[in-house]
Structures are given as C-alpha cells and as structure tokens.
Length: 317
Figure (cartoon, rainbow, N blue to C red):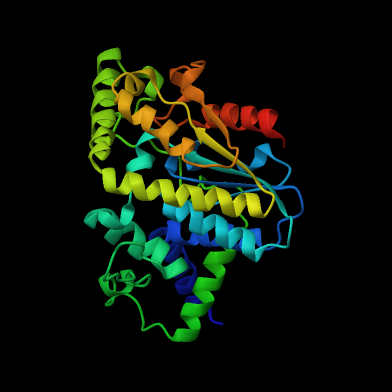
C-alpha cells in the first residue's frame, strides 16, 4: 500500500468515526458483550447514563447507553447484549433515566427519529418501533460533500475503514475521549457549570426542565412504556439478572422546575411491574454540588466518578 493510500485511509477512518461516532460506539459495546465474563454489569439508558456511569467502576461492565435512548431501545440493547453473551454472564442491569423518559418515544418525534433512529438504532436493530416508514442513514454520505477532493472509494476500502473504525471504538474504555470530548449541552461561554453566575444557572435550569416537562403530555407513550418496562424486567428476571432503575443526580436549578407529576409518574411506572426492582433516585439525597455537573442535568467527569462509585458500593462491583 502506497504512502498516499495510507494517508487517504487514515483520513477516511477519522472522518468515518467522527460522522458515525454514536452508531460505532453502541455497536462496539454490543460486540463487547459477546465476550463479557461471568458476574458482569450491564448498563442501559439515555445520555444521563452515558455521562454519569463509568464502566471502570466495576470489575467487568458494559455501558450500552446512548444520547436520547428511550426505554424501548434500552430493552433492545439489553436483550441483544444478553442473548449474545454466554448464559449467566450478567449479574445486574442498570436502567438509567431522567424523569421525562417515562413519557418518551423516539419513534414518534420526527426530528429525533430522523437523527437518532435512522443513524443509530435502525442500522443496529432493523427496528424503528412506531416509525412506520423508516429510513436508514448513509454512513458514507460525507463522501458526497468531498467528492472532488477524494478518489472513488471501492467496497473493499470501505470495509477496511469500517473494520478499523469499529476496532478503534471497541478498544475505548469510555464514550468520552480525545475523539469525543465531554462538553456541556449548552454554550457556557467557556465556563464550567460551577463558575456560571447564579442567575445564568437558574435560567438554563428552568429552560431545560420546562422543555422536558412538555413530555408529560405524551400519555399514550407513558402507557406503552409501562408495558415495555414490564417486559424488560420480566426478561431480566427470567435470566436471573438483577434489575436496578436509577435516576441520576440533577442540579438544584433543574430539579426545582421539574413537574411534581413527572416525578410521581416514574413511581407509577415502576409500580406496574410485578417483579421486585431496586430503585434509587439520587435527587432524594441531594449531596452533589455544582462541580459535579457539566450542565443542568449531566454529570461532569468528577460527578460521574462519584455516581459510579456509589452504585458499585450499593449494588456490587
């Protein structure tokens, strides 16, 4: 292989990883489950799990969470992970969420399904849930943007890039790395959450909570999520896997504006499950400060270490 070809491949692999990072990351975690040893911990959930729960807190853990992941795709991830592993590999499964997740259905949101389902979940599971006419995104679409600068890529070269990209993500121990730095959801003008003025934190917390509160109107999705959670927990228990539902810590500025009814709905969701479930809501024990957060409802690196250590201490490492 010529030096020029090597340079082109290196560039293409970098672009492929950058443009398809979330798909590649979740795919790599599902592949990691295939070789998980006995006593492993499985983690599913939304961005709250991705930001707050670190695999390194356990002897063996796989974090199959993703940004905006709803309960339906939590279940699909867990089911594929568990079925692909050897029997009795996973000892416990964390289902990590925010209050609004009880009302969320990605497949009924036009913008989210076209951004997340099309590019992450449909390629992985070929399942679009309630999206009747799904479309899978093209992972190589960036080539069209740079067609004049790059040679035509053969199928064999594409496969080489895809395999190299997958291996790169498989070897990562954390979603966040030099390739994907941990950044806040909002533009904080270069400041950390702890250094923001009180009034700015208050404004951002209220705006974020109110955006999530709008999910409370999705009563049909809430009822469907009851069924999904019941099936999820039944599946875990049938495999002798301990189910643990976790609400991660949120900032005071966010918490004070979350609808009380949203928090109560999570308890209703859990009460519809006949099997025993461990449940912890870290916001009932407020012991996290501004430095533990990256933004209104996502943990900083320091906060993630604390949450992960607490979960490992409470439920076993």
